[in-house]
Length: 366
Image (tube, rainbow, N blue to C red):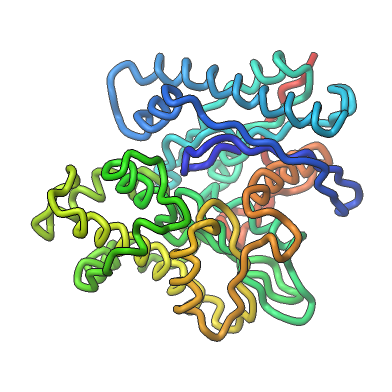
């Protein structure tokens, strides 16, 4: 899995039998700087996009193959012992309202490099059935975190944030909340040269501008009813520039270092507030909030979430048995298993699709 944060590729090796599963290993590889820049540029229109996307997809498949190799060596397994690789690809455009979502990938090359079957292109089948194509993780979250006696909400904070609402004896619900790390990372890199705010320490030294925050929360997406999904098509550098310009600021380096930290604090509060509002509006009966993804490593963001959800226990997924950086990769291993066993991977109540669908396409090893 390489998500919208573009912080690297995570892979997990899982054994799944009769809906029971076990995580055997986890590997991570950073994205090369040139590939990361190419993937970021492909989120908006530019010259020679088809050529650039083809090159980026090939480079991404090479990184995927490296992660698969690491996992096999770590877990001492051979290629013919692997049923399939679930490879999500990198989302560069997500426009379900226009009937498409694009995850660039080169699954044929990945199959060639690894000698393993590859399942890819998970989202397009749901979109073809009238769905949002996202989020696809609630079914997996339900298998992992649901409890028979209480409502649990799972929050995945990657570049964007999404929630899964898991109630006893009910199908899971879920939707995208808005930005997670994407705006935070962009602003941090611009002003500190670092790709993300380690532990949220830089932003924690800033002050939230409440009027700026309220203006950001007027973005129409936040008031849309589910099913809904979003991505860098909306919450991107242009959105950030327009938001700052409306308050007389630019997204260039700030002369005032404190103001730069204030913007970071306000963006962090925006991510936290959007998640908290989604939970209180749609899952006020929840007792537990399980947080996964890179955002769970941002102590300032976690603190803000806890302050907004005082009636609920907010904790990283580590405390529920799975490392925060493994959950989404494990979800796509689960979706690959669902494809192989001809089971639906989507939840129509979540995505808005016309019905359950088997997701993904198979690229055989031979």
